[in-house]
Image 1 (tube, rainbow, N blue to C red):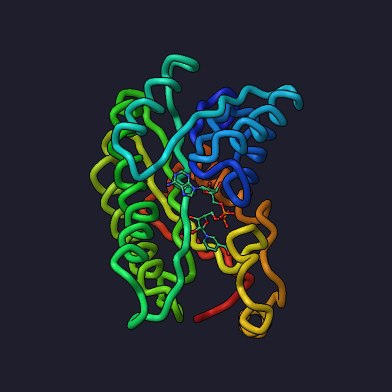
Image 2: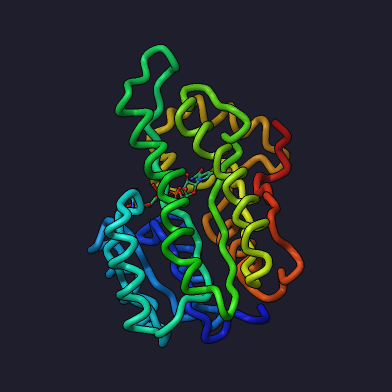
Amino acid sequence: MRGLKDKVVMVTGAAQGIGAAIARRLHEEGAAVVVADRNVPGAERVAAQIGEAGGRALAVALDVASREQWTAATARVLEAFGRIDGLANNAGLTRDRSLLKMSDEDWQVVLDVNLRGVWLGCQAVIPHMIGHGGAIVNLSSESRWGAFGQSNYAAAKAGLVGLTRTVAFEHARHGIRANAVAPGATATPMIEAVPEEVRQGWLSNIPLRREADPAEIAAPVAFLLSDEASYITGQVLGINGGSII
Ligand SMILES: NC(=O)c1ccc[n+]([C@@H]2O[C@H](COP(=O)([O-])OP(=O)(O)OC[C@H]3O[C@@H](n4cnc5c(N)ncnc54)[C@H](O)[C@@H]3O)[C@@H](O)[C@H]2O)c1
């Protein structure tokens, strides 16, 4: 893909799952990759694999819900690579519970990581893109339309759409694009705990009749971060096997 070679791209939540797949795909496209996660050994493993494959990767400790850690992580990236061209705000988590059983803590942690964490990431990184431009991709979800047991997660992932479009509007003049992707069910550790009957229910609503492989989310994310997507901003791309909720 045009425009990723030698670019410096940060991926949050990159120690496993979709984030690790994004990091690997960006490396394959010639980017230098920042593997950021609060799971530091996991991030170091992914960065080491990319290094062994001949790429440039830096593992960075980052809890996306902490402004201080964003400041430190960004400084570390600038020290190592001198610039930041791309950001995939991928870190996320779920704390599923039906509305009436959901605790304040379940609500707060999911909003802090999935929504505030992305807002903090944009605030931390965009100042370093102004001057040369850049691209941001935020991981929303099909759950943004509402999903059983996910009032917290659905609110966060729907909120991400408004946040993404606002970033796109405010920073188009700086040559910075911002888009979101909304994956459907994807085979990662995040959905391992979902009961089999629930998963079968999902599959019956997916025309392609299977969950996504993380690499199938990573490819469109890399595209949106690349110059191939130079006229695409403020959009939400569903990656969902054709399902219409
Ligand atoms: N798997 C799916 O079916 C699916 C569907 C739609 C959207 N998504 C979204 O895609 C993204 C990746 O999901 P996944 O399935 O790979 O999840 P995962 O649980 O497999 O991986 C998430 C990664 O994020 C990291 N993380 C969690 N909280 C963090 C924090 N506060 N700071 C830094 N890192 C943190 C974890 O350590 C982990 O490495 C998430 O935003 C998720 O909401 C996933």
